[in-house]
Image (cartoon, rainbow, N blue to C red; front, top):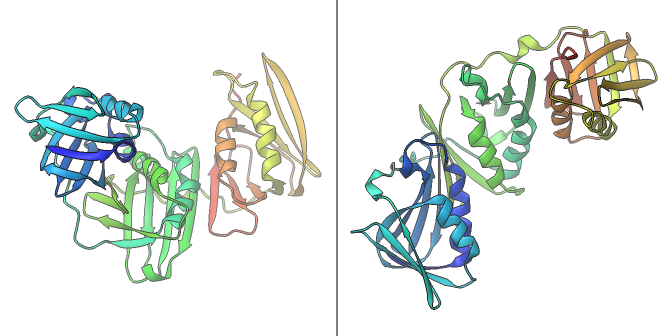
Length: 369
């Protein structure tokens, strides 16, 4: 392999692909990035066998070929190179790659490229296309609720559905918190999709998506999902199984309801979090007429704050995990939130004021003494 490319372009492509590299994988070749230069195009690929990312960029190819190079070293090296054209030559007999820049050079020893897993073939036609801004906004509302539980893998993903009437919905839960959002997408009407996509994949995807109405393509097979965004492609396995019906955790009746300023709630909770320890992670909110009372006591100290709200119903005192509470509120895109409670140990519903397309559920927690 022999090609020439500009340093900044190489650095950008490797940083994107590097997100799929797992440093804890037992197979040494999976710590590598695969560089493939063909006909003035360079593709940089990484995979941990569950998530794969490839990034394509134009280069000046002199000899077609490939090299599997340690991702950690090559990405750090590119980031520190001077802004200039880099000449890259691989000796297939030794798997050594030489990077020449000006009067200097560096050599990295790689792995045989045949040991690197092949990137799966993408279907010819996309399952659907959607604006990057729409998809990114929806993901931002649900990802905080994804679980990381090896014993219940179905909760480690986001359930993404498209109904026949063109309603795109996403839901995530770890059984202690839940987030749901939906969006009407007219041009998706007539098709149905129901898949569970790993949260890890979507966390990487949201970093790549931009706040633009430009559409990107999504391809779905029986076991995989592909996201094609311009010159970047992500592929991921789908999580097998049936996602639970989230409706069963939504209370039928509520005993109290408040409308409260989101920023005031976040600020009060973050101040209470300053006193939180590993032993004590639950703070309390007393829902009452006129003002909420946020309070927390620990061996480090105590805090009490009042927040003016609109209140109706019965007074109630509820404990919440403070981090979950903050994470939930930070994805709200309105100034006020409606909180509905049906008991101090029943799921609480949080809904942005004026919005019926999304909500979150948070299960109260018992104070750890």
